[in-house]
Length: 160
Image (cartoon, rainbow, N blue to C red; front, side, top):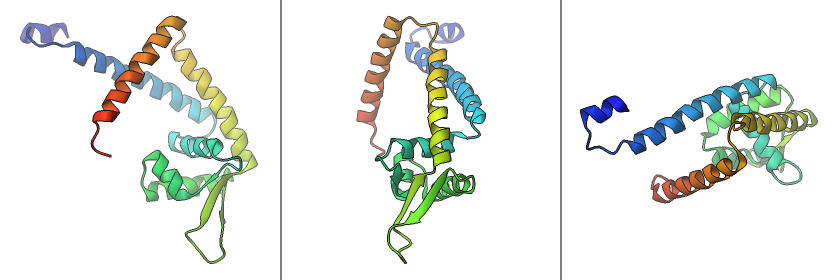
């Protein structure tokens, strides 16, 4: 940043500094979560599927369409994730109506429920550890500011 200030001192470089820090923080978080997912034999996409099912209705079931739309991935990507999780017996698919291939529900198995409960607890602890050096008032301020920024960016986003 100091080098850029000498190149063009009129530019306000604060936005660059803010987003550089956000990017750097994301790298640390990604690395920590990747290690956490591995401890549970998952990747990020598989974790997302199991977590979405865990948060779903009391039966922990959703349609494949509801899953891929909620995760902003393609149908093919979701099918691949579901196939892997089904082979590992962490989810099950069942038809709601005989002969209708479109009426499929995806649900957690007992093993899937066990893994996601453990992984989620580990995720919360992992993310909390990343914030260990920030006092509670600073965490609250940071959360408020990031929520405001996120809301403003989402409001301006015309891509959806």
